[in-house]
View 1: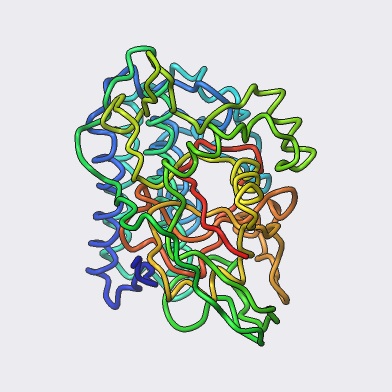
View 2: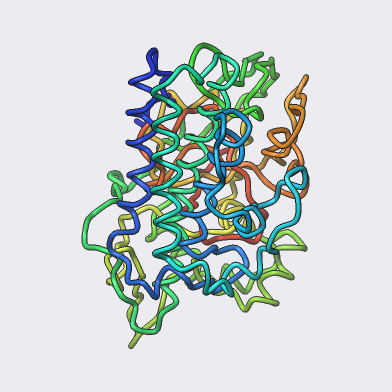
Length: 396
C-alpha cells in the first residue's frame, strides 16, 4: 500500500540543505537517459519540453526564495522570468504554453548552468541564518512543486518518445506492479458520517484543507484496479461504438478524436502492442490499464453496470486497498473544500484558480516520486486528457 506519507519537515539547516539537494538531483537523474534532441520537443500543448521543466523548477526557487530573501542576490538572467514563468499572473508576462517547444534558446547547457548557479546560491542561503520560520513553508512548497514536475517530466518524456515512430525505450526497468487477482472483490462500507481532508503534521497542498465531515450512503469499492484484459473486453464488446455508455460530451470526444483504445496501444499484425518506458511491448493483459481519460473510465464503469467512486468514498476506503500504481479517476468535480481560502500573492494562484471544469484523481502512480503521496492528495485534470498515468477503480 502506498503510505500516507509527505515530505518531512527537516529540523535543522543541514537537513533542509540535504533535502533540497536530494530532490533537485532527482530531476537531473530522470533526464540522464535523454539525448539532447529529446529535451526540446513539445508534441502537444499539454506536454512541456524536458528542458522547460528543469528551467521552470529552478526559476521557482530563484523567484520566490532567493530574490526576495537573499541579500545582494543577482539573477542569473533577467529574461528567464519571461521564459520560465508558468501561469503566475502576479509575477508578470510569460511565454505562452504552446510556444515552449519553440524555445531553441536558452540551450540545454545554459539551463544546466542556471540550475547549478541557483543550487549553489540556495546552498549558501540554507547554510546561513536567512531561512526564517516564515520562509520554510515556501521552501517546502518549492520542493513539493519540484516533485510534481518530476512526475510531469517522466510523463512528458514518455509522450515524446512514445510518439516517435521508432518507439525508442526510455530505459529498461520494470516500474509497474501487476494486477494479482483475476476476480475483483468489492469492499462494503456502511452509510454514515465520515471525515476527509488533511490533518496532522507534515506538508499538504492548500486544496487538501480543511478537514470536514461528509455523509455517504452505503457503497462498495473494488479492491484493485481494472486490468488491460478487462478493458480489452470492453473494446471487443463494442464499447467505443455504443453511445449508451458515454456522457454526451464524452461521445462527442470519441467521434472527434476517433478514440478506439487507451493511449499507447497499437494494433500491429493483429496483436495489441503497448508503448511503455521500456519501449514497444506486447500488451500485458494482467497489468492495470493506464492512460485513460475520464470519459473512457466512466464509460467502462457504465458498461460494467457500476460507476466511478467519489473522491470522498475513495479517501474513506483507501486504507482498505492497495493504491499508488495509477492515478485513479473519481466522479468528483474539482471544487474547494469548505472554508478554502486562497493565499495572498502569487502562491494563491497555485491551486485555487483551477477549480473549474476539471475532475479529481486520487492516489499516486508509478511516476510519483517517493515521499510525495498521501491519501488526501487531490490531483486534477480535464476530462479528455489521458497522457498521465491514469487508471480505473470501480464502485457501486
